[in-house]
Image 1: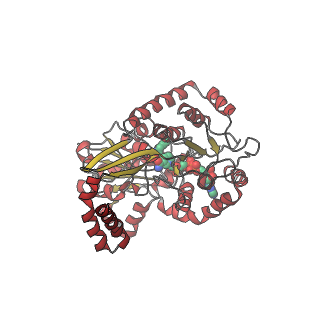
Image 2 (image 1 turned 120 degrees about the horizontal axis):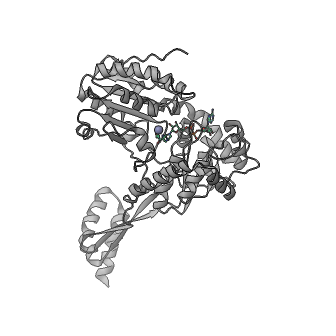
Image 3 (image 1 turned 90 degrees about the horizontal axis):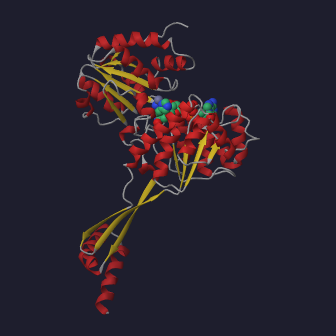
Length: 441
Ligand SMILES: NC(=O)c1ccc[n+]([C@@H]2O[C@H](COP(=O)([O-])OP(=O)(O)OC[C@H]3O[C@@H](n4cnc5c(N)ncnc54)[C@H](O)[C@@H]3O)[C@@H](O)[C@H]2O)c1
Ligand SMILES: N[C@H](CO)Cc1c[nH]c[nH+]1
Ligand SMILES: [Zn+2]
């Protein structure tokens, strides 16, 4: 196959539809799959386990009828025995880093403020009772996603955690995922992927428990199914197909930028990877180097890279540094690497990005696996309002309010005035009657 031709594009020269397509990226795929995912979700709602077994055969080419949907303790034992020692050590090392970082997110279970004398208000945090963790599999093996989800969920003290992950063609589950699950203290793992897994967690089946929240990244199929069940279950951070921006200037080295640009692009054809630079020279050098580097990558990643750099990804030449920063903030990338003369100063100007890597040593891969912060991140522009998955995603809060007689006296007249003015008769009357009762007793 011929070499992929990548042409740097000047942002100022792009048409509005061209810019809109770059900004929309995988949202286009997710939208187009919602209608196709709906019958899968409905079948699981109506038929439960039978539909999961059927879709495993149809969509994962896996016969799971003899093994069953739930992974057995013996499979966990086998996975641990089969996994190479170096991989076990790498997973252990990374889990420890992720735990060290997420431990700092554990908040006090209750904060209390005496708003005024006798008005005692608290915020109490409790774990969400049942959470489903979606661990993708197919275009990659993702033990890293298991521990990125399990570590904060366990620190949050969620009582019921149910993991779903697609079966492999022989019906087994990725042993690295099982090893990581056990290391994190989880043994409830179900063989189900894609839209069918999301439906199973939303509605429950004979085997898979229904949960209150589903957390975890996935393909456009997973993202589309989450949209369908979103009125029934909390679907958490919208973490779809991976995407990244490298923001680089004249000081950056083309070979490093080229490889860093290719990291997140190799996840799939629906990913996005952009170099945004004010340097025309760097843009041209990176275009040439990425074109020839792609040819050295084994399949299927070669095809994914080709598709990305002729699809949602590319090389953008900004008019200047200010425009480059503006493009990044408008795009709101999942991953951002800044490799510029003063990367730290530029980082302070980034307002929308879920993960900001600063300086040429901070490759995306390090943060994907082991730097400490969570690598399950919002995509599709959702970094404008969401952050990385954290311990907070697995907890909720309640307000506790206790009013003493003194606090009541301080507030009641103001509240009666407000209730009258809003037109809520009973809101005011409940306080007026209390006053009459106090006066007559
Ligand atoms: N945003 C994040 O934090 C983050 C993190 C890691 C991975 N990701 C993304 O997760 C995705 C992982 O994708 P994956 O494919 O490896 O795993 P996946 O588990 O998300 O998807 C595989 C499942 O999709 C379903 N599927 C595939 N083709 C289908 C079809 N034609 N019809 C119906 N269902 C179908 C199957 O059930 C299969 O089990 C990638 O896009 C990656 O970029 C995102
Ligand atoms: N880049 C992914 C998040 O978008 C995380 C990951 C895991 N493994 C490889 N990459
Ligand atoms: Zn990645």
